[in-house]
Image (cartoon, rainbow, N blue to C red):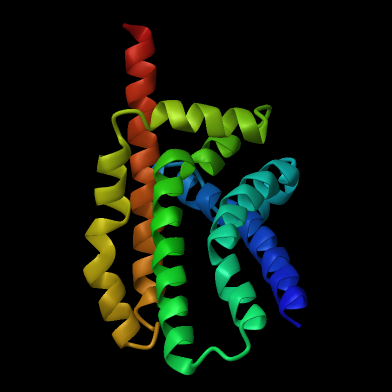
Length: 191
């Protein structure tokens, strides 16, 4: 049952990575003052979706590797008591969150690059993203993650209803950050 759960979770993650790339395209059009439509949400399906899937598989695969002890240890140790299971769950969740934030600091803007440069491959986008993030990692972390902690707590207190307003704000902030970093790169290359 656990293996089936992990496979289904990964399939959903892969599909959602393509859809979230479409959402990024939607917000990128808004940010740049272009015309935007609801159909933009499905734009990534028309732009070689395998590139977005590869980025999604790599990022979700890293998080999945961190959570393996959570899935394996209880089955190999059937006498595990409830307190140890809770501790293991909390430790794996914290580790997975930290690793996801760190990975995001390096390749979090890869999908935007894939949207802007349709001929670029997934690995090239991740390499370019690492280059873009040089000197911008902590600014990215503060702007797109740390500054929203309070809002995220309030959203969880409202049983997720607040995320209807917070999530678009977070995505738009990330989009403006990407546009700013891309402009910096263009300015640095012009000099």
